[in-house]
Amino acid sequence: MCGRFALTATPDQTAAFMGMAELDDFPARYNIAPTQPVLMATAGAPRAPGSNLPDRRPMLVRWGLIPAWIKDTREFPLLFNARSEGAIEKASFKAAMRHRRALVPASGFYEWRQTGGKKGQPYWIRPRHGGLVAFAGLIETYAEPGGSEMDTGAILTVNANADIAHIHDRMPAVIQPQDFARWLDCRTLEPRDVADLLRPALTGFFEAIPVSGLVNKVANTGPEIQVRGEIRPVPEKAGRQKPGADDSQMTLF
Image 1 (tube, rainbow, N blue to C red):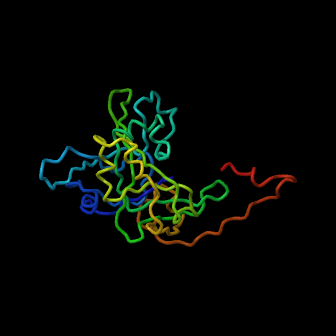
Image 2: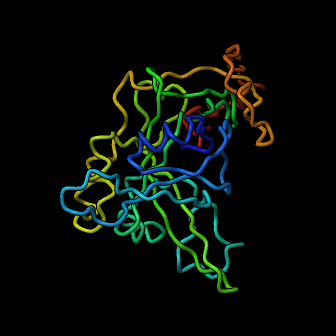
Image 3: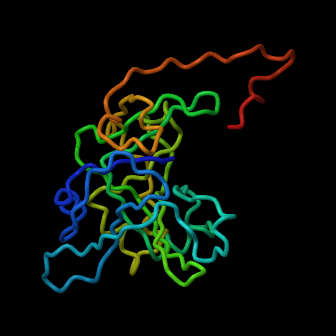
């Protein structure tokens, strides 16, 4: 899964990477969390013949997708991630998969090693050679009861690769720059035509850096949360096992 990420590149760097004409100024963001606004890119208007101008359009969306058919958001879970394996068929995502695919620029993301069903050691996971990465995203415009509209979005996830699997079993789906146009083309390409792009990043693409628990608090938004920290030991299972208990029945997954 991906529950926190960062975008610390400058607007000019981000625009150049994403193929957008320009971006309004924005500060470095080190600890982006669900429900906060995130930058996404969609396909813009078709290019004029012979034009070399970028055709991608930036959007600010609320991180946490709300399907258009939801009546009461208070009774609906926060969909900040979407499992790519079922997104084409799942009611919450299938319309966005067909009509509103997007890219989410990021400098990297955070993940926590699970210990006993709880969040353990946090890691800052970034491209090994630096620079930006683009996650596969989805956008849905939700009409609020009062009549106003809100753009919402989610990040698609896939099975973790060997760089991440020892930390978590899921990771964001990474779209490579040469595939940006294919992923964003919702006019001529259906979800099945781009399903091959939803795959784990190649082994070695990311590096995982252990960091302190500062990242756990959304209020901590400075670069210090990415400083390398000590890897905390995994605690031993507390207590004695009941007689006849089977370890294979002590876990939910």
